[in-house]
Image (cartoon, rainbow, N blue to C red; front, top):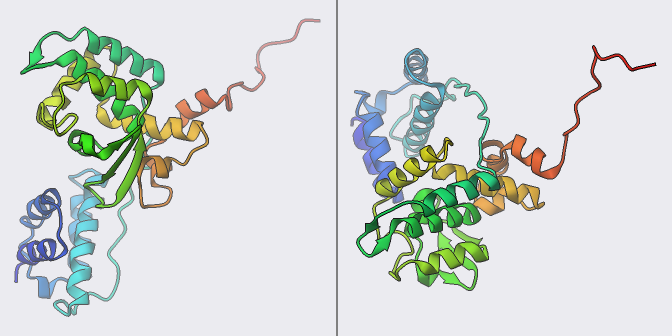
Length: 276
């Protein structure tokens, strides 16, 4: 059996999301391997060669998919050739960049200048609500796009995250909830007005006009960073399952230290000579 066919069966058996199934299909389509014959040496050779033409993060994702599918094959007795782990793929540690509150205010003010409507929706109102809700809720863009009014009780939002299928509670700020209530009432707060790709295009235009860089993901990083400033757990704020993931990949350390007043004073100068 081709490894592609096995990967599809694995995804269907475990109830993988359509997005993950698509990732598996696109990747394993390039490997003409028989699942029963795959060896660690074959995988190591592929990873080594891939690192010469692809980014380390991409190759690390390939290693992760290979490990997941082949571990399942070994567990079910389909493959008996794998007796050790595959070679490591070192990925440079990311340096997360988040938007500060002043930058988010700038984006909100720029959003208010947005002209035009989308059906019965002023785009300016939509974008203001999107930026404010994205900041305080810290959700992935896909989850933010699909939140429903029925999931909101008071200031709290209770949802199941699409990526991990785990429940998560997030809290609206008063300003974000007011901005959302300005929008025409639909089943979904945002998702019934425009597709996620369209919204991301609107966001990109506002960000560019404001002279900034980034995307909706920067709002998630801002949520993690300001949660840490408040003494709260970034992991809990983002609904992560993996310990330390939010701290490593989402907390903007520079912004955190600025907001928390840490490490702000430089060392004494070397070349300046004191008078007298």
